[in-house]
Amino acid sequence: MERFGVRIISLILLLMLTKNLSSNALGDSMKDEEGLKEDQNEMENSLSNYDEMRGMKDDDWQMVQKKGNHFVVNDKPFYVNGFNTYWLMVFAADESTRGKVTEVFKQASSVGMTVCRTWAFNDGQWRALQKSPSVYDEEVFKALDFVVSEAKKYKIRLILSLANNWEAYGGKAQYVKWGNAAGLNLTSDDDFFSHPTLRSYYKAHVKTVLNRVNTFTNITYKEDPTIFAWELMNEPRCTSDPTGDKLQDWIQEMAFHVKKIDPKHLVEVGVEGFYGPSTPQRTQFNPNTYATQVGTDFIRNHLVLGVDFASVHIYADSWFSQQIADTHIPFIKSWMEAHIEDAEKYLGMPVVFAEFGVSSKDPGYNSSYRDTVISTVYSTILNSTKKGGSGAGSLLWQFFPDGTDNMDDGYAIVLSKSPSTSGIIQLQSTRLALFNSLCNTKCNWGCKKKKLLEEILYRDEL
Image (cartoon, rainbow, N blue to C red; front, side):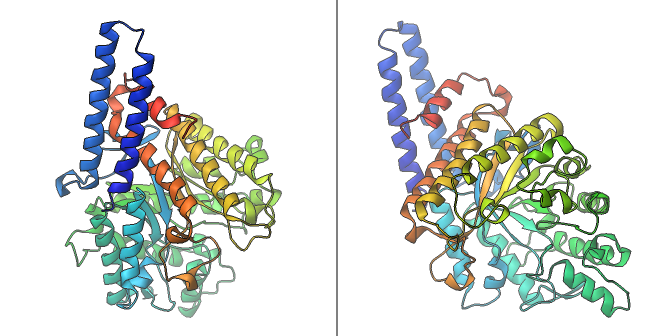
């Protein structure tokens, strides 16, 4: 049932394309007509292959890899339309709420989304995964197992974040509390990044998660293609060292640590994308002057050995002012374009816009404005896709099923309550999925299908 919506839109697009091609071909030679028919047949076959992909066999469920500026699966491009739902593990830990995890994946799949970013941490809190350093609640770990196994059922891949910069779900502050409880004299939460004991706590957690054998699938996490990538930390900042040296050293050590344990999966840092001291010419793109003082440095952070792709977040409503304003839209576009350009010119890697959204609590908010923000992000991704650029996809913050209002931070998108937003998401999923299924990386983005792709993906009428 979940496949039908995307399939219908695919067929509509095919019919529109076929009609357009037919009218353009009236004055062409028989040879040209035969070539067009051949291309149309290939497109129909690709649509069929895409449908099969949605129900692919386990043997075809391969690791996502990086090839230059792009993600690939089975040597075909893998552009991402996805979402965040951070609380999946906690909900899965309780039988009364576990069904909401299934609902999230089922509904996301129904609009064609293929990647979910969620937490693989909960440190020292309610329903903690890690109750104290290297001491785990097995029932909560089984809940994370369930999340991974359930995602696979709906052919959704996971970006698993391994720690939090913020106090929610423990964060670096909890590591500092553990250190002080062990007799250390720590005075700053940023000691998380520099103190060898706290680094050892984090590295032990990474090792435990990556080597976990899923109790539902019997697959070790580090061997599971359901996991798209490991994220070192959610939105790391180190304001005690604006030079960025302290955080950079931590990234270098931890990226190497993850890759040493698990060389098969992709790794990303989790930063918000602020430009720092190493690139003063790029700080003009930051949302404010404070962004240069938080210890992150977009280009420098992503030049680290072991980091496979870049992450960027987009929150105009919290970085500028909560008041909805037209100036937010051009910022979003320029912010994205700057990072796509840097990923292409300096990093040689894909970039994922791993969080973006608008809060319904913002003064002046309305759903039409949210749709405009989402459409702006999606169209910027498509413009990069059209050129074979580094813009590899985006993840909405955040996606909720019905009946989870108590978890809403203002950014929740519930499909049943947002039909226009649902349509925008589904169209983006369809466009990217068609591109993924129609083009092979061996064509170097210049195959004979390129014109067809441009017709089907970028028609103004859509």
